[in-house]
Length: 401
Image (cartoon, rainbow, N blue to C red):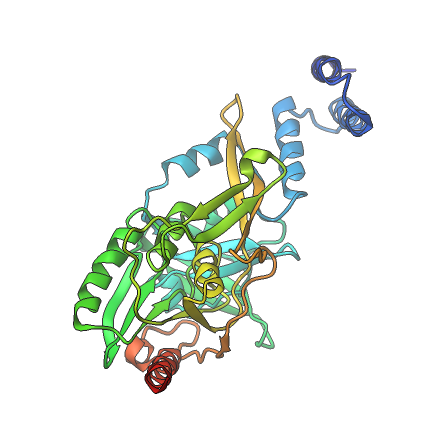
């Protein structure tokens, strides 16, 4: 046996003996875990002894941790020191890239959650649930999220070619995007779109979202509102506490907004509205689609369950899990799913999504590689027009009774 293999085996054996001593009083499931961990130690020892090339122990351990986390679910992952450092220093609200929120789907494919508004990806016509088969001609099969993000990002002005598989298409097609500095403005389009009907779009939940939404409402409400359209389409989520604040703006103080449940007691949390003077007195239509995920589903679910808002559009993405980043001693970290979201009525979001109260299929006016056109503005958006009709109908009904 080579010296490095022998050293690794001694280290692993010592490590497991220490844990066995600490957990000797634990029930049988722990004993089964020790047996399986010994199997891992044995495999690593064989690899170091007999593999054609010598492998550093850290590379083997990192590889095992990567596979371990990926085997749990598509959102948990192992971050080596470089990946963890990059995650920590990412600029808030501004970065270089194409403007895509991505995930690894159940079948292991790299999938678009949503293109971010006013970015190369949205202007290029990419859609939620598009499968990214290749990046610059290289297959994405087996790629991690971190690796995919690194390949998508690059110097502003440089180009990247994505090979896309879309359900309704009969063949693969390429989309060429020019990278740019991505600046995300979370609250957009605060305006009156019809007589006494307001419209506000939230693209992502960031630190300043609640404040910016309050400012938009302060402009819209003085003239009186018969209804508000809150557009959460293609909103991939963001900060959980900000989503709770946004939902709380429209609910009486003390109303439940969401709960989280996990194996550890500390992960079982309940969040309630805290706004002293909520924005009330008018109905809300919340626009959602397959690109509405995570924090946007929290807001939509809370307004729906409290009958404060009517959901219109298509089924949401269904990303309702909490990932906690746990640093490790060598500078790496675990990004671990620790709990799941539940709406006030106890409805699970994760893997399920939210069904709209009024189902309306979106009509795309952009082809891959196209640009934003006037028809895509809110006042000419078919779903916004449908929401306006619904709000006016509600007003007529309220007057009648």
